[in-house]
Length: 94
Length: 466
Image (cartoon, rainbow over all chains, first blue to last red; front, side, top):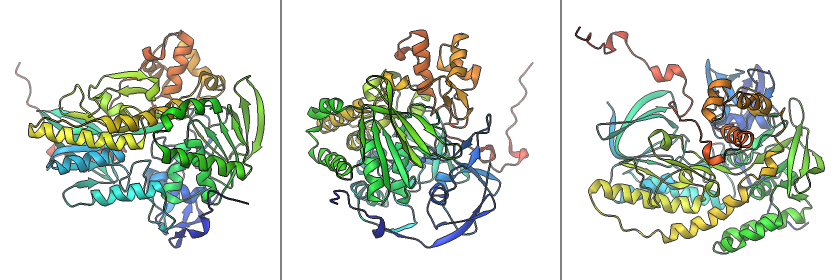
């Protein structure tokens, strides 16, 4: 089939894979990519429960404004979309 | 000790980046403060360190050009830095910033705000389900991480962005289940005269749409998403035909990209006393500035989408105008720059904004049980009841119901709340301004603001004489 927009997937070279944990579960991601992207690719869409109705929530604005992708690293609440993946990162739920 | 500069620029997108370059070229000592790891803003967002090599894109090339120019030694660039408060003391701007985890203060004679825009998403049932991301949010995923939103994605929204996102999903090897846009082909025909001035951008758009058609991706014109299904993750979407308010086809998908135009980030300008006005053709509430960025507030300049959504090309040109004007004002020199190029670029940008503005028929899809305020999980009827109780301003809804007081600071609910107030009270939207912004302008962990201090160092004022 004719494609006017070529498929570039095979032409993308990524950094080496590293493993980290999310809520105790091992996850792999590429070093230096956004944590939100790595969790999304690993199938972890639900990152937390909303405070008032406990409904599932995940990354939404992907630019550090909505705070939906809040996770805990080293006791600090951080935005997954503004955090880089690194080996041994221990990511918890809020 | 605080660092002092001639000019501080907030925001390193096309507007702020170019304002910085122009001001530095005019001889000013400039600091550029930005919350991202690299300059480029949202539109020219840089790739993360995880991408070692990838095919070039027009956005990537434009961003790399800006980043290379900014790397010139005369400019101080503070990346990963959030400005959370700005004050004026003795004719000097004082900015409270947080870089990574360190709180510091920066002072400058003149301030240029290039705070850009955020996305508006019209709330519909299920829009809080994990797997629903903003259209602009999807572009951030593509540009930064070259990552797809899911395996099979419905892309829905207004303006050209919906086709760009669908096309990028295909470029990165993903599958687009359908493109659903509230715009009609007639809407696009009306935008043609303004688009002819930008043939390159028009040709790109034509390629996106033709490629989707060749791939037999359904394109639903005049349709919107009325409901997202799925509990812990998206499983499908229901579409709605806007013309006659009837159900359209439904699609199974594991992700949805949803967005309805951009809203200027005016909070910082508004907080510093710049007048705001409601102009739907510029994306809603905008802060008032001259074409060269000058405002009614002394030593304060605005440029780019933050003073009206006119697009990246216009933002860059206005950045040059504002940077030059600010540097000339400091040096006591007059400015005589032509605004013609900016006006031509703005014409195209405004036509795209006109396509992107949510329509009243879209607002009707926000049902009573739809969550309006994501932070506090408050539904449309919760807020509607508060309006019935007499809360007829965004400020009174905020204090009565906490809608807009959550961690996002109202950025994702204010527009929908204002529309609901207008609809319920019969007031024009121009009479329902956003609440007065207060610091922190960005979310700040309290421990970081307080910093490390010794109680003995705290200044204790002398007791007042009796």
